[in-house]
Length: 341
Image (cartoon, rainbow, N blue to C red; front, side, top):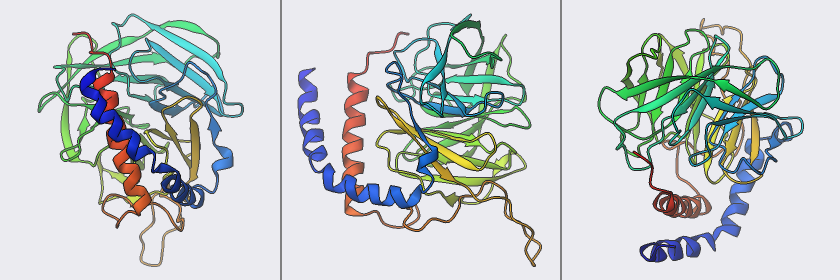
């Protein structure tokens, strides 16, 4: 351990020592918030220690694609939710060395999009990458050739962890990760492998660690470490302030996706034997007497759900978790191997 990290590590340890009571309080909220947790699953593959993205397969029922954070390699894993076991590990070729893979999404063309979009140096990379390959029809370990797309942001480099492909238009979106100035970025109508793909900011978002569109494309779900919301998607933009989702407490909460049928949001986190928690969403409702109709995929009401960032005050236990998480993540960034140029 580097000497200059000792004070930070000691502080983190001191805060973490307070976590048992805070975790108990948080677990109570999570229990009421995720009544369908039994339909979730635990990722048992010891190779998957930093699951940082999640997307549901359309051709393999109950299978979810995931990947590690940085320092793993060009690998994508298919996990069977019935057992929690990996049923395929795909090795990608035709690309460079991944730096920090943070997101994964399935497009309407049946191809998986992998976002090598993380930048733990605070937005110092002048470009990032997206990899794309066809979802395999047969689940087994395989080596597949992927396309590589170079991505830049119109307003300069930034850190990001959320990659979303719209299931109808096929357009790719990225949500940057910034405490005060996070943004939602829209890619070109179609990606080009021969040139630079410029993503342009179309809106502001909170601190986002992952996102996903509902299967019908009618809603966008975004999550952070301590919150989640869904937004109606209208005219290529998220509408309104969003609606809070009863997201579980998961420590380093890194992923979210809809189930293939759109009835449930699946929330994942980093760590060995990490748990993917299922949270049901409301079904599409019939038009009301006023003529307005809710959009499918809105969060189902759940008493005791954790508040979104603008939805009220946190409990003392939640504040302890925030402090511990902040210190732990800061230490992780400093300890992480310096990325290659």
